[in-house]
Image 1 (cartoon, rainbow, N blue to C red):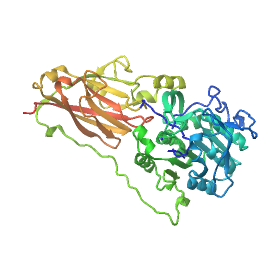
Image 2 (cartoon, rainbow, N blue to C red):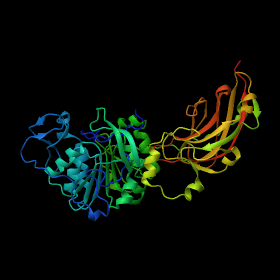
Image 3 (cartoon, rainbow, N blue to C red):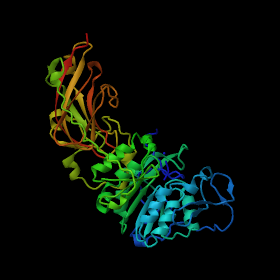
Length: 484
């Protein structure tokens, strides 16, 4: 597989196999994607016919390539590519030999394999050959899909369907940077994304035996968007996790911790960056392989208290508040109708910052907002609740002093960010505190200069596509004098 801000720099497969994705509806609106309806109604190979013959083939970079290139497959005949990126000509022949060998030894003839980040297609070709009684679903949202189709046709692969779509952690249309080649600048435009869970729910494949993910920095996003699929089908996962994840402020350790929390207990590491996982799969072990057990501690619980803060207590620090960016009381969401794709796209195009005009309801008294579970939108960094600071409380703070707030809140899902905001409601004037989900209430203390404190803000800081659910119990306050 291959190694890889705008707000969401998604990154798809690079041609030199070492490592994107939101998911997208596979419909006639997407060239090369599967047609609507049952799987049996799909064409066996969704590729435009072309006559490759022995004529020189374009390398899609403005020159003519008079030679083809082969990529070595351990234990099998090499795969010939007729369309590829000239810059990576020297990479293709011997790339990822350990990973290829594992597929040769383990793929069964009737497997259904999802090649997410198919790039120019040497893995899709290999899968089509090995799983000749099954199917291959190849996902490549960039212009590289043309090369993918040409290579599939040249190798006579008739059991692969190409989908020009991106898979990730959320469903909808997003402007993103998607890389055709790792190391380039990528193509920035609006892409339709789908979670794999949504794609599978709509298309209902007969089986899900293996998911290979190699999407330059977006690999963890794909995993999160496939959570229900992993739980239901328990497919073999082959995912690239490396330094490219830093492009999205993520890490391999974070992705492995997420997998460990969902019951994965071992991973076979191939070619340094490719992790093979499946729950209950003993054959991942190698008798002569080195082994390292990773232990991920549980999230830290916060039990801070305002009692340790010097100052005068304030009885009524907050007045009214409002839910924002489609945050809802959880009971309201349970009774809401299903969300349409149009609504999902509309939400994705909104700017998720707090504002009166963007709120989901009128302002309510502070007490009406406590003791009720609030569910955020699935968009990372989206503000969910804003509580206005009482001007009277600020008047009680000595000149140059600070407002200190103790917030008691239970986070039952996701991860919650809490901070005091200033005149610009999207900018914190206090350090932001982040609380992970766990049983029972937690308490954190935040403080900011009283002259700058306008509201107490709560936002979703969980990974993209994950909702946070929290219940606010109460807020205590103190007026802190200025430091001597």
